[in-house]
Length: 131
Image (tube, rainbow, N blue to C red; front, side):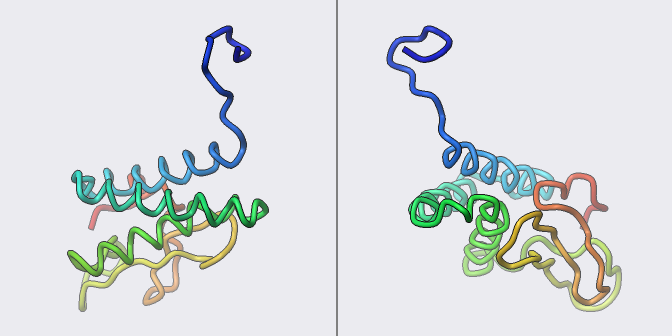
């Protein structure tokens, strides 16, 4: 029995919590930029599945999951659809995508390298100016 008395339920461990949190942050950014179609959500699920193995091998990397999942989805979108998320900071010039920084580290942000600014935390694109 779980602590809430539900038979058959299993408590969610810290690695699963980290994976669920990363999924939620990336989905929030996809929703904020209105690209959370079923096939795109499948890309998130594919990344989470792949990263589950990765974090099982290196549990200390759990804090890096949001940035890694964001990068995985960004790469998958680039292959199928084009750049995402487009930079909302630079109104002129060629449209360009934001990048995740740090590439491998905690507290990842979407960054515009052209303007040299942090635009939003991963999961926080809803608060950034729309592209």
